[in-house]
Length: 212
Image (cartoon, rainbow, N blue to C red; front, side, top):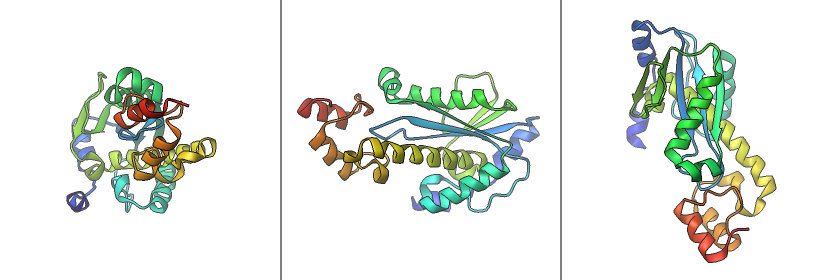
């Protein structure tokens, strides 16, 4: 985490894409890949050229209130923002990496205007659109960082809504990730229908308690 904080988020990669002739450059990122419950959510964000978004960086490095504030700023300044997702059943059927790609491609497909260049956090997608996968992209590309914030805020709100339906698991606090609180709830109650049954802690809970 200390190394990530040292990275500088800028529009360098966006400027490089424009030098190649790109006009509509979309940053793409997903959240929820490591969770035990619920969907993986992706966001695609096209920002205007030379936009300044003070404080935007990898969503994991931001406090919740700061993410919420920046989400509103990004939405007010962006050319286009879209969301895609893959639910737990899809994740279990095709695996989390392919489901994450499906969510990202779904977000990209909804963009208007359609992008002519994609900046993606450490991934390569099956699409003819020009693209660049960037290691630590959500920490160094302003477009990817914006997408990471939008996706995180959207998914967190979804998890708070699920908390109302399944309060025994504590989704409002841990957002479906494998915290001690969540693992204790799994052991006590067993998984619910929206848990990812191919993930080891959930599978183990099913073997011990059976699904609800």
